[in-house]
Length: 190
Image (cartoon, rainbow, N blue to C red):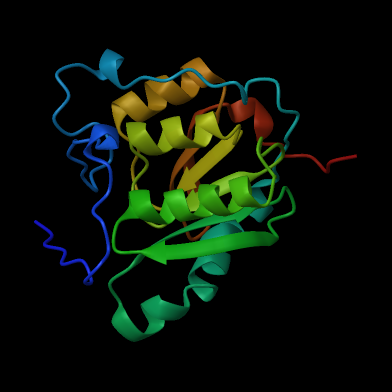
């Protein structure tokens, strides 16, 4: 609830343009009866993105993400999301208490910088890869999503439907590739 007191002489807004609705900071799925009610279609399909990634590049992403987490160093309690190019170079990293919010900040940066669709990019997250994060990435045209933890089965299903590469348990020198393995190249890229 918010109480506002107007200064003397200030007229209240015209009540005929009032919009009353509740908003939350949830991911968007909470409170929905069916996933079909939150499933979105993207104008920027990642399916045809020609992105190719070397395993050596992917293995470096968690350390590069962690190195860019300035607030985590002092708090130890924030998630991060980072956008990387095909060579593993950091484009942007954002932190937040919620991993969804960190991803929203990264995608918001890309939108404001007129970089959507995010062709040729990898979105790396410090937590798990959920359905909602895959959907957000697909909406922005991100062809690859990598996470240090597990994806949900719904995330893997949606990534497959969208033609995205989904990588989980990206830690140390190992990873699990759940979808889009054709983007991972084991030979030198010519």
